[in-house]
Figure 1 (cartoon, helix red, strand yellow):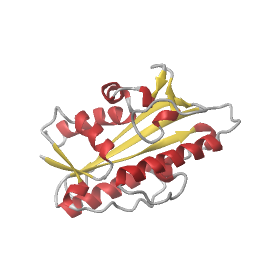
Figure 2 (cartoon, rainbow, N blue to C red; figure 1 turned 120 degrees about the vertical axis):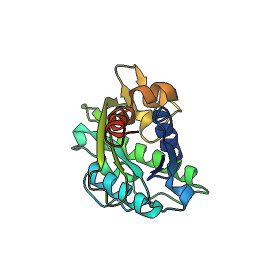
Figure 3 (cartoon, rainbow, N blue to C red; figure 1 turned 90 degrees about the vertical axis):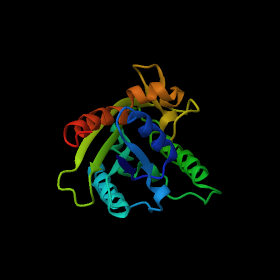
Figure 4 (cartoon, helix red, strand yellow; figure 1 turned 180 degrees about the horizontal axis):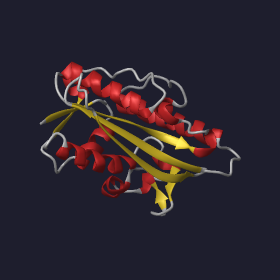
Length: 208
């Protein structure tokens, strides 16, 4: 079964492909099909994920899955939340998509550190909300949510992962997310937790 991923993020595609490897699913990034990214105007992860999934399903005329994820910091009342990917605002244009994402990540991390300067409560969690639809107007979207608690460091550590990974320390693992290899991250992450639920739903409801 072809399942279109409503994202153009190459690293997110790689993570989700690994997590779905044991299902009869071909996960295809929407960019391969010439599908533009959907607007994400909503205030909640679930609304944005559903909008992205329906957008990709309509354009691809088939099944799609979307992940709306981010970082929620307790002391910031849940910010950056749904604007995690663009917390620092737009950055200067870069030569290619991945360079653009790296520049955005750097700016977002800097803004987060600035917002938490002098703040003692560093508790936070990553959240991933996955939504899958069989078609654009599917009346029964599948929904799964995963949370991964951690703490925000005062400086980045590690060179793996993307986004806020260098700043999020996982006490149970004794390192930041950016210090984890891909296999370990995929075994513990918010996406792994959400995908475990989603895979159970795909098997039960879609009979994959």
